Length: 552
Image: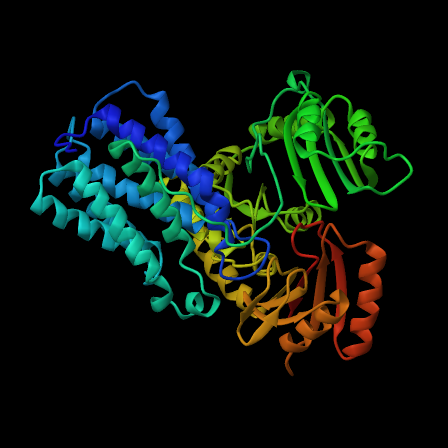
């Protein structure tokens, strides 16, 4: 089988197949996260990014390959989430630049486009690291160009690209010690291989090979809706008004009269609303659904077990408040300098707002805002200049990309944690200029040491630590330092590692799964253990991390 010319229809089908293969395997990519924390979202970020590009392509009617490439690149750019998503967008931005003049492609032009993508991606990254998606893309492009020299066959080029990408991926543990330590290949590189496999499947008519899961987990989930940012609708336009969440301990309680069946359970709830998410294992089922009948959701859950968590929000009331806020923002006069930050948890968001932040973009770990989200946030706050605080290193590239494409002056304060973002805000001067605040805030954020407490999602060994699934992990400035089964104990261990002779204050921000009483008891333990330091606690309501710790 040979193909000497690639037309627009073939190219569109390749894009769709690449997205479908990535979507099918994105949880596998997530599981390749080096650190065993519950925020391994490379696969999710790449999938959402490429889906944005695919959707844009499907909306266009042109069969001009170059125009399709331009539309794909634009869709990827605006939908880019996380560093992996931004790098992916850059790969296809460079790809599209190489083909923009052509109505169709021969083998040589096709191969050259892959190299164009590599050049653009390497140029976009300040300090490229080998053993990552960049290495996989580079070796794949090199093989594609060699194949084009030997044989003018599109299929042969794509096969060479895919095979070389797989070979390069297999060697990534040899290039990055941390990958070798945990025995995984690079997650971003794996995501790219899945896309290339989808591309090739359209040209050969052969379905991509299925991958074996990294671990056996009887967990099922269906996500009908997965977005970081939602458009504000008029309250009257909301069909299902109650955001309802329940957690059921299966087989427990006096109300149980039915045996749990995942498909039957999900199908029933699907009839009660939309935006359904059901996650279940042998003991617990978690439900998120938008419905008009939250009581019926709870009653149905009780047929299978006891309710151990209930949360119901009136979205019409919430949207009414948002509409009012949007109107106030629209009427606000243009500021000289506005600050956009990223945060998860209403308590943390309110802390930022009280310090002078103009717009809090919901997101963080597991839900990285896209380039478009940042641009849209800036458009909602009239200002001449903008400072963006990502508060997460995985959001840097999306923030920087937004700053570059926005029409106004914008810069990024490279805050890696919520704690750094809050500390940086202490140096913010409303009357100061963009450059002055950028410099002072960047200096101030280095004065804090950031600690994070979360839990392990699998057994692993890293940094000399034997980490067990579901045990707590203490990270200091992003590096895992301690692990323990007891929450309060690991907080004390982490603080011990964080303080030095110059330390004066310890601040704890407790998350959504910690009660105020539990936090206060822990505060007393810390004050007793470190009686020469001031200790403050705040309610952050953040997910994933029971405690965020700062030492100054």
